[in-house]
Length: 88
Image (cartoon, rainbow, N blue to C red):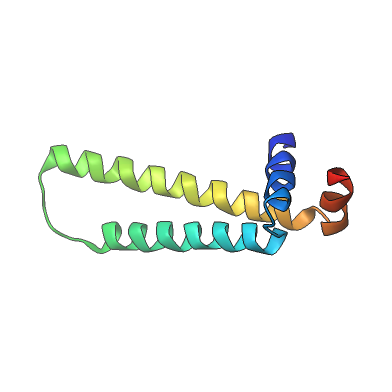
């Protein structure tokens, strides 16, 4: 995931810390979880065409949640000093 390290380095160049990047990802996870919960708990019958769209949206949100969580895990595994070393 070289591009993630590059993103972290650029974030550092713009004064964002590893914690701020993680905070942003946690926010995206929260937004996606809330949206997914809202869609899944809505029991309105919109018919088969919109039900298919609803299922597609649920799959997309689940994909994004997995993606954001994997980024969080990866970023957490990168030591802060490694990010700073790469900048110099």
